[in-house]
Length: 269
Length: 307
Image (cartoon, rainbow over all chains, first blue to last red; front, side, top):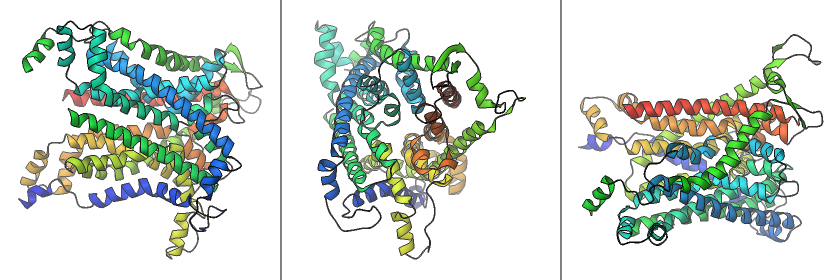
């Protein structure tokens, strides 16, 4: 009996798992701690303080970072809304429209942004925009973000749709509902948790992107990651750690929300 | 209920049958127009002639690929020799990505195994803990790593204060720093696919092996590893491919000696080099390498599916 319990266990795997978690979290936690450092240098510890957070919001560079944060936020919201809508339609096509020509290539298309290395997408878009004479700016950033957000929005949406049986919509059709009504009144409400989860993931992915944005942004337009990168090039300063901590918390909150919403939907079922 | 399901399946009347292409239209437009078409244009660009001021001339030329592979001397009239500079950068990228992948596997496999053998709630909490760092901004994670391993950073200070070392270890700007950065960036990518395959693993196989007096190591090598191999390959690809074209880790953690493909490409567009056709050519070469890896992967998957 004791032997049977043992097969699942390998000695040393538990410590390695703890090591894995430690490696993943230690750098982030250290930066969080140092963001409260009351010292002008990043090396010496000068006691706890919120001065670098004050600096982020009201300091010399605050305007730059606020504008960048606003740009990031607007682009992320717009990109997440658009890509979530596109992904919802695509998921409906993949899971609710039976067989049709171009289905498998369509599936490959949705996942294509995940296959092409980010730097290649960045280069291709930069060349494309400059070739067709598109001025780089907000719109170019937004279009690029919509493209790479689609597969991320698609994942939770498709997963959710897969778990909803088609009988509900079929019943509606049997009762003479139009297909649009079946979609609007039956599928969409059932899909809500999946769609919210997809939206939140797309939002974070857009908020996080550096490489593609760096290539397609016009002169003078910065998003938060490109502004942070520009500042870090001159050396890590304490205010960077405060911004990093804030952005990190935003990501964690959104992922947790996405996770909880996804689970909430499952429990209801 | 079950009856209704079978009826609807048997008549093959999907709710939105016939609307498939219409529903896919937005995806086609957006991804087709802003990804497929741009990659096509990049391919064309790589065969154009560069102009001195960083622009291009619409004239067919193999100069970009020629510059990558051949060295024709300063004035371009020497006999062609192989140009090693760029091949070396590619080789270094492959090596760095490979080392990072190896370490991700070393840590990722036991972690994935451990999580997959938990039950119920504790399993989803473990999984969640592994996924969170992935969603944290890559730039911020790379900056954290840079901050941690600086010569005067917390890691060195800690090691000196505990007396393990007396002088700071120089990590930043070395190959190791870049490997560490890549490892740190993509570790969750290794854990998740391996977890998915261990979760499907039938533990009766291990039991049978144990009953036949196989040791743990033998069971691991002969039974478990071959069974979960698709997950391991998927994890390795998910780490290796983005590492190959990574820009942030080599740029922030490495120095001039750790130049990788991502930085080479970036320099052609943003930096001083300003050679767009060459940048496009390097991107095409990188994309081809990635596609080769992915095709190999697809073949492997369909093979294991047949079995």
